[in-house]
Length: 272
Image 1 (cartoon, rainbow, N blue to C red):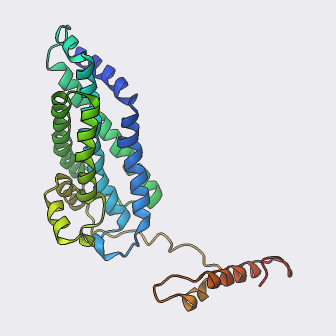
Image 2: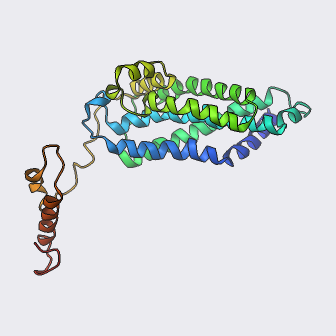
Image 3: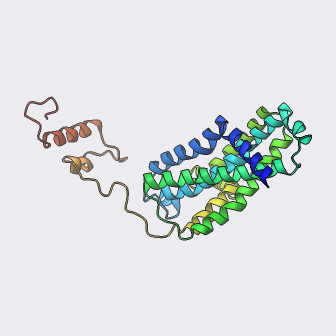
């Protein structure tokens, strides 16, 4: 057991030095969920009654798991195979099962940390509600994480080089990412894409996570509800185009009116 923990600690140091880990496991899910969570309106009907931010945070738990299983592990392990590390490990004092066990342990720890970073960031930015069953979310995510980690280990051992592992991993990751609930909302997809999305493993994982977390519970008010209205904003509705966009001229007039009512002296360059 001590040898396994020592080997896992060494593997953890090697994993966190990989730029692809920081990019696809930590930075990519957080940045993308922040963008998508703020793009759609809170009352958008395509999100099955949930707020877009809550919907995407639940979906991106699966994205973190897929990034670890399809990108991080295959590239790292294929580089071992390419450099002959696996052959040297066969003649070492460690048993054969120790290295795969260390990979699984390290990948599980990275999954927990990356999901925690995602949830904390989403809570700080969007104020996520507390899940109905936090233990259920954790227990429900573990089988999916273990399945993708197993797939990643199999791909890393089977592929001959890190480049081939990266190419195949990206080829699998992005369709899973776009169709597994982390891309367009399901009600916005056409029939062919919706049919394909239903068989993507991440789709079922995102649906189960939202079901256990309780998407139907009371949510916070819309993000803009508590902001004070500035003078001139009440006139915006009178100057909108049929498509709902405000004309540039109307926006300037409202902006100048707001500045004039904020105490600026007459004759200022922003005066109407």
